[in-house]
Length: 140
Image 1 (cartoon, rainbow, N blue to C red):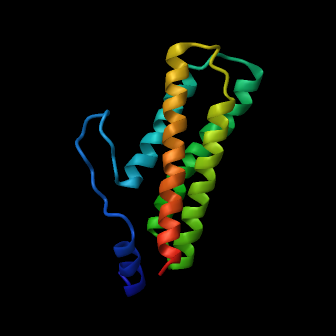
Image 2: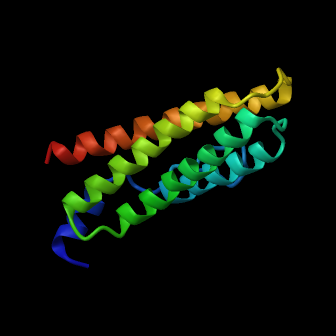
């Protein structure tokens, strides 16, 4: 590990996993973003079939997976600029996920609506976390 990579890891929030139950928060972002992507995939399988949902779901699946992929790539970045770019991409994909979560049609099913709101909240939290990481890095 180079000195630049070592410094970058010291600046990032510490990876802490609190508990192992689904109801408890995961603070290490790699598993958290992966879980978000898997939860989105489970959610879209239960959505009603419609023309608009078909297109929105395709995009939602892509961008939710890209949140996890870009964050994982950020952790393997070659330097500070590369790390910042990958985190920016992850943040952009989280914003896009949030948009498509708002657009999908749930047919007013209360269970689907609750899941949609929960996933939208998680996408918003991932945006805020990414923004926080970027602001801390740009301060150094």
